[in-house]
Amino acid sequence: MAVLDLKGLLKIFGTDVRAVDEIDLHIEHGELISLLGPSGCGKTTTLRLVAGFIDPNAGEIVMDGEVVSNASSVIPPERRNMSMIFQSYAIWPHKTVSQNVGYGLKFRGITGAEADKRVKSLLSVVQMDHLGARYPSELSGGQQQRVALARALVVEPAVLLLDEPLSNLDANLREEMRFEIRRLHDEFNITSIYVTHDQAEAMVTSDRICVMNSGKIEQVGKPSDIYDIPATKFVAEFVGVTNSIPGKMSAPGLFEASDGAKFMMNSDGGKTGELVSIRPHRIQVHSENADVGGADSQNVLDGEVTRGYYFGSTVDYLVKVPGLEEPLRVIGDPHQFFGLGSKVRLTIEKAAVILVSDS
Ligand code: ADP
Ligand code: MG
Image (cartoon, rainbow, N blue to C red; front, side, top):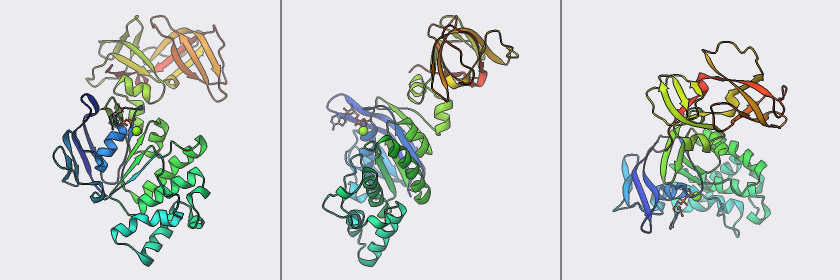
C-alpha cells in the first residue's frame, strides 16, 4: 500500500497544451480513486506522470513521503513498485496465460515453486484456474482482461494504475467486470487510480471520484456526493442528467431563475453559484390542481407536458413551466402517465435544489 500526493502538478505538451494544469490530489492508503472526465481532459497524462513515463513541467508527486517526480528528477517506472493496466490489455500473444501472469515475477527475483504458487493463486482469484496453458488468441476479451489484471496484481505492487481497462469489452461484460474490479480491490486493497470516461464505471468501482475537465480538477468526493451535491455545472451535467437553471440567489434560501421562477432551497452553506441543478428524478409529477400539501416546505410548480416517453420502468418528460426558459426534464412513475399537452403539478423538495457554479 502507499499514500500518494500530487502537488501543483503541471504537464504542458508543445508550447501551450496544458494537459494537466496544476492539479493537487491526495490519495489515501488502500483507496481506489477514479479520474473521470471527457476524452482529452488529461486523465491518461496524469496516470503516466504518476507511473513515471513522463516528467512534469512543475509540481511534484510524493509517494509515502518520498518525492518520485518533480521538474528536475524522475524515478523511473521500474523503480516505483507500480503496476499499470492498459485499455489494450498488452498481453503477449506468444506466451501462455501462466507465462503472461508470471512474467513480472522474475524481475523481482521470484522464481521456481514460489512463482508457480503465486501465478496459480492469482489465476484462481480472477477465475481462470483451468486456463493457464492457453494462449491469448484462445481467450475471450473478458478473459484477456482478467489475465492483464492477474499479471498486474501478482507482483504485489504498492500502486495499481488502470487506464480505461474495460473500454474494449462489450457492454454486458463491461458491467460484470466493474463489479469484479471492485471485488479485487476489496480483496487486495492496493492504492489504485482508475481512469475512465464512464460515470457508471466510476460510481461502482471507486471510493472517491475526481472529476477532471480541461486539465483541471472540478471536484473530488465520494460517488454519492459527486452525484447529489455537484459543485459545478460541468460536474452536474457530466455525472448524470440534470436540469441546470441559471439565475441568482435573491434571499437566503431562495433562488430566482433568470426568467422569474423561484426555488426554495436548503441553506447553501455560504456557497456561491450562478445556477441551480435539479435531478429529473427528484421532481414529482401530479395531476393538475392535485392537493400536494404545504407550499412552504417544498417547491410547487404548475406546467404542461411537452414531451413524454414511456420507458417501461420510468417515463421521461419535458414539462414547460412559466418563469423558466427551458422545459424541466422530469423522470416520472409509469403507473401514472401524463400525455402530451397534459396540465400537471410538480413538486420538488428543497433538498433537491443544489446551487452550483458556472465555471
Ligand atoms: P484523456 O486521457 O483524458 O483522454 P490525455 O491525457 O490523453 O486525455 O490528453 C490530454 C491532452 O493532452 C489532450 O489535449 C491531448 O491531445 C494532449 N496530449 C496527450 N498526449 C500528448 C502528447 N504526447 N503530445 C502532445 N499532446 C498530447
Ligand atoms: Mg486517456
